[in-house]
Length: 234
Image (cartoon, rainbow, N blue to C red; front, side, top):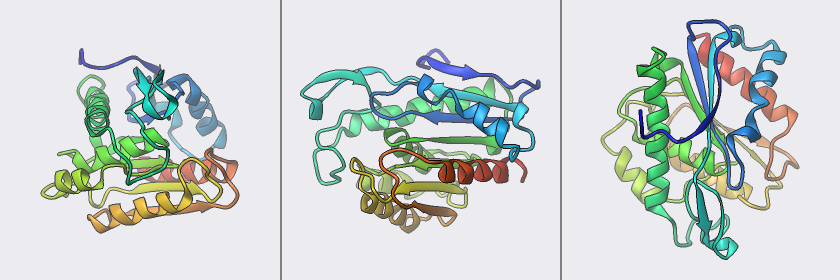
């Protein structure tokens, strides 16, 4: 797996690991920015076998961001206009990041012998967008997807890639979005969920969080933890 980029890893406390959560950060962040998630899941006492989970938090490469006047920062793809699905999109960069996430999934299967259906992928903002698109392009079934404040910048391409590939259409997807998000508008998140349902993802559940901006809150994190438990205890 030499193509893998750097990542913050929190290995399962109980060996061998039985499940994996690969969580992809948003623009300008790093894997470290979500390093608190394993502790939150453990302290919730909701996820029954939390000590058997491998956590992986990949680090995005540093690239110039057009909307920020070419300022170099961690990102999974370039952005030309914030939150505008009709703007120019970095399709090549976006699909490249989907392949990076696919490689992290395969690493958990091949190196750590995690069953694919016990692997959950997810992310925040850019990471949520990449995770949703990745599940639509995989040729093997995984356990679930978590998308916080997510969106879909390249609908036509995802629809084409998903056309003859329905293996994950009944894979559970948790999508959450705040109604006061000024970066990725709530309406964009809602339309993204409708798009994925239209192309066949019938187990996608869209959760609304009143007053939440481009972030998360306790209610969403509690719902997220319950969702993770539902996948891992099936």
